[in-house]
Amino acid sequence: MARLNVNPTRMELSRLKIRLKTAKSGHKLLKDKQDELMRQFIILIKQNRKLREEVEGKLQNSFKDFLLARGVMSDEMLENAIAYSEDKLLADIKTKNVMSVIVPTMTFNRDMENAEVSYPYGYAQTSADLDDAVDGLNRVMKDLLELAEIEKACQLMADEVEKTRRRVNALEYMTIPQLEETIRYIQMKLDENERSSITRLMKVKDMMAEKA
Image (cartoon, rainbow, N blue to C red; front, side):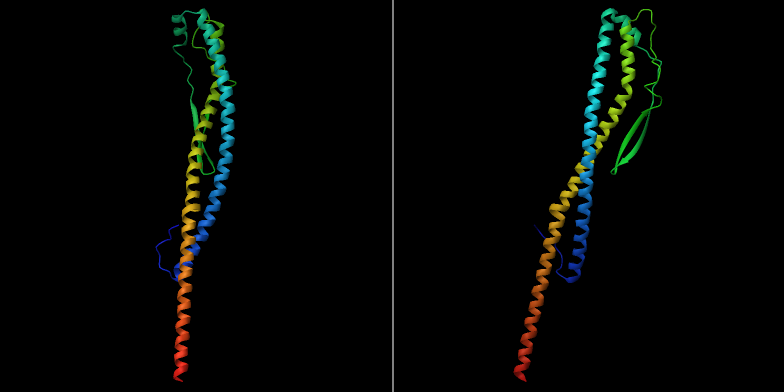
């Protein structure tokens, strides 16, 4: 490991020891953060997988009802029935902080479970299967929004996990080893200088003794 290009002085040694202590403390904090991020990420992944399976199942049921309605209605009649909708749906988007990751929280501005289904067509020339398809899609909207929220949170959490992992690795495999190697080098140089000084002092003492 290449050492830092610094002067081998006691002041520099003291400064590097402080940097090393700070780097080790930062590494521990980042490692703990990484572990907690991974735990939260795994929980979100499990929630995402379970919710996606539920949403896909509900959508498949709605598509089946739609196909049944298409079988008893003409294409023109079916297209006219679902072409326009007067129902407007808005979502409120807020954010929350999860381990320094800002993730979105999204909710509809009305209760999708208790809201009455608004059919964009009359009942005279439409099939009951079409009603079931529209009703099923209306009920799954809340789950779709929750799925979008969780998937976005997973994406942001994965990015933060990767950034934290890179910072942990940089401290663990580069910064801390460089500081330790440089501290050893400075300590070795200072010890050599001290031994050289002692040797010179002993020679001076011997010379003075001989003269005396």
